[in-house]
Structure formats: structure tokens, C-alpha cells
Length: 157
Image (cartoon, rainbow, N blue to C red):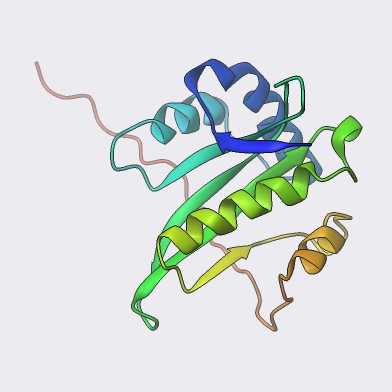
């Protein structure tokens, strides 16, 4: 039996392992220092996202994801996004991933969200889990324009 909850500061080391594994699996080019910045931001009051973890019966963290709150202007209601889903191999196929998704769905329903959404690569075997959970493939492209961080000039003394 698995249980999901919002991450605590003491979960940082385990979540970092899953965060980096998720980026590697998705072949995302991470930036140096991305996890420490993301972790710190997730605990800031008024933050737009939080980390969620799933524990096994021994209360060992075996997976994580990030949950983002957005707003749909054409629906006039929140939408909730799920990203960076990763479950360690020993817990796959046993309900840990489903537990993370159910936690995200409960959160979305608590906000009266219009939908729960996620992005996944075509070749990611977790797609089957997402489809069984009720996610539908949409006929849209997911596009991005990478931006470089702005280098700010030092302030005059």
C-alpha cells in the first residue's frame, strides 16, 4: 500500500534522485543548480508548484512528482499540471504511480480545477499508466522556445 503527501524539507535528498532521474529519462537538458533552486522555490509562500512524494509501507519515499497550479482563462477555472513523475523501479507496477496521480487529482478537485494535465514523451512506457488513469492524448503540439537566463549587470556601489 502506498501513500502520497506533499514533500517536506527532509525529503530533499530522495526527491533530488527522482528529479534527476526523470530529467535523464525524458532527455531534458537540465541547468546546473536547477534542483536546489526548484526545491527552495517550492517552499516559498505563494509558490505556483510543489513537490509530492509517495511512500511505501515502511514510509520510505519511492517516487515523486511536481504539481503545478495554473489558470485557464477560457474556462475561468484553475488547471493542475503534473510533471517530473518518477517512481523507483522496485515500486513500478505496484500502484505507486497511480497513488501520485490520485493525489494530484484530489488536489485539482479541491481547487475545482477544469482539468489535470501532463506532458509525456511518445516512447515513455508510463503512457500506459496515464491512459489507464484517464488521461487522453490530445491533437496538439507541445512547443517551446528556450530562453537563456538574463545576465544582470552588477549594481554600482
